[in-house]
Length: 137
Image 1: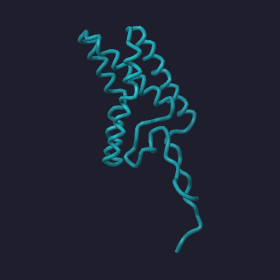
Image 2 (image 1 turned 30 degrees about the vertical axis):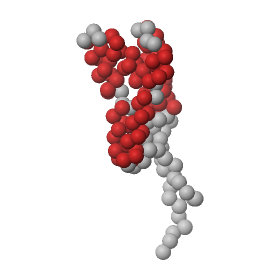
Image 3 (image 1 turned 90 degrees about the vertical axis):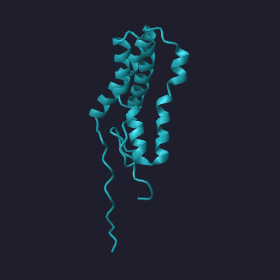
Image 4 (image 1 turned 180 degrees about the vertical axis):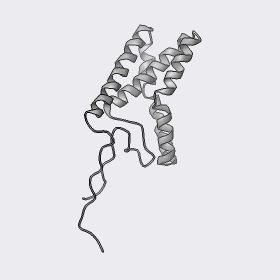
């Protein structure tokens, strides 16, 4: 027996105004990291060359959504670039700092554009949005 009732549309993971705050937070990190990158005399060619490097983790999706989400989230959370920046500052190893700032910038821009941390249910399911239902309604 089939029902004529349609499934309710998926609710967003985060709704306005909280979503706006999270995107503004991403903008803040992106701007701050770019300003600091300029301040440490970072090479802008290096910045351009490495900016998309974190997105290589999307190759993890070739092994399935659970593994892909794990790979993506590991590199798209602020903890690893923060650890790299802390190591650079505390060990007085300044050449590491630009890499951390590029990494922060990438994550900040992703958040600003609405790309969030992934759930293992699929690439489009993030902490900032949910995938739309596919197929006819």
